[in-house]
Image (cartoon, rainbow over all chains, first blue to last red; front, side, top):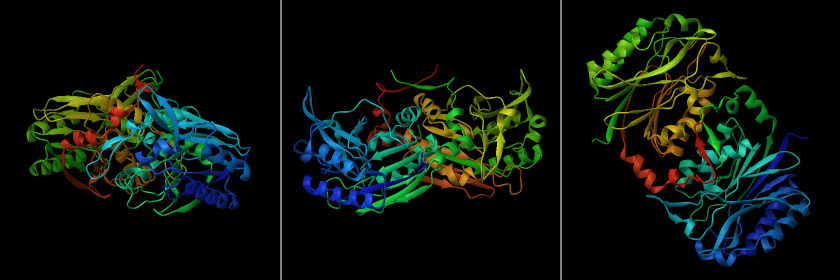
Amino acid sequence: MPTKIKLAICQLKVVSTKDENLAKAEEMITKAAQARAKYIILPEMFNCPYSTDYLNSYAENIPGGKTYQFLAQQAKEHSIYLIGGSIPEAVSTEVGEKCYNTSLVFAPNGEELGRHRKVHLFDVDLEDGPTHLESAKFAAGDQVTVVKTEDLQLGLAICYDIRFPEFMRLMVDQGAEVIILPAAFNTTTGPAHWQLLLQSRAVDNQVFTVGASPARNEGADYEVYGHSMVVDPWARILAEAGSEEELLICEIDLTKVKDIRRQLPLLKHRRSDLYQINTP
Amino acid sequence: MPTKIKLAICQLKVVSTKDENLAKAEEMITKAAQARAKYIILPEMFNCPYSTDYLNSYAENIPGGKTYQFLAQQAKEHSIYLIGGSIPEAVSTEVGEKCYNTSLVFAPNGEELGRHRKVHLFDVDLEDGPTHLESAKFAAGDQVTVVKTEDLQLGLAICYDIRFPEFMRLMVDQGAEVIILPAAFNTTTGPAHWQLLLQSRAVDNQVFTVGASPARNEGADYEVYGHSMVVDPWARILAEAGSEEELLICEIDLTKVKDIRRQLPLLKHRRSDLYQINTP
């Protein structure tokens, strides 16, 4: 089993036309596959502007919607693992139409391997930044998602999910060695916390963390930070994008997970006699 | 109740004579009190070199030992809250004499307010750094420590304890607004993780974190990193020492804790329906 894995993050700039977003994703996925990336990762809400105006008209059924089919076909065509960032998934709730914020993972044969619905909704009122009330439009997922591939186990979370260390731990206790985080931090929280959170979860859990953001969209309601990033289990930044559209390619060596865990056995040193994270 | 609190960290250089260490601590505490610091903090193992050669002969009984009396007297003399870094506390175990690594907190009237015994022992074998087996010489504590003063609630942890996010959460759920961490990161883990961990625990828990290290001791068996630091709940570094002996003074504004928690209600957004940290 190879321990060196080539990843690519497509830090695409999301525009207001779904078809244009899919076309851009296809272009970047093709380039990444040509560069022999085996795991290709799209950002959060890559097919739809991150604005409540668009959600309902862009939402799709899963499985079966246009973007679902696009992702399955791309994975198969290029024979890659495709982590499809996230898209709005249509759902009917007691209080009317809402969406899940859903990430889909496809195998090189085009079959869906797993999906994650964002668990923590971003309801904030920042002094020097945006007010944002996701729960008005989104429904929350309720699952921890770890996807097994032929090479490794991927923990999958979306954006705000990373702020909750307990949630990350549950993924790691289920075997995650690489945590993939499609995300869209904004220009307030991004400079303050994006790198810090990716490094912190990597070091605490001794895993790789991969943050995949859209490119900066200056002038939009919600301005995205960019800076997609790959961090190793010792908190080293292996690759980082700027704020513009960019294909970020990075090789990770999975032996580092075991190696760091042997040198500094943090996970074994937890005092389970004093605390445990339980799932009620 | 005042919300602005002046802290001082005495980043003293630990030498091999206990009395010299106490004399240096007294000198720095006096300066800090003259500068009107109300909370004065000493580093981990401030009275004893961080080497197994010294532990047993330097260990004291608590209460009653020389350093215990020194700290009580200093707190009273200067009418300050004194967080006495940590010292080796003598303890008899089933396998012979060991020590606790113990932090003591004294009130301005000279009375002990609380103590913390290091819970997580540092047993590591770093590739580019030291091998260290604390459990051979130390016994581990088994308590979460939060100390209430007239101004605030202090969470108290020692060095390696900070690497365990569950443990920090328990302090915060018991009311900690400021986490004090006497510590002695080394010159491998210090540059890699010291600032990251202090910032990460501050941001996740929306508290102030205060790391108090001894000064660099070049040539010692275990070289200490220094860089004592105060971090606010948004991860801003309010003050940072270099590697040499230094008195670091910093004012914190406790209203920031409530303010940040209102803007970004992380603690409320935890999904207790999906995970809870339990104490068995």
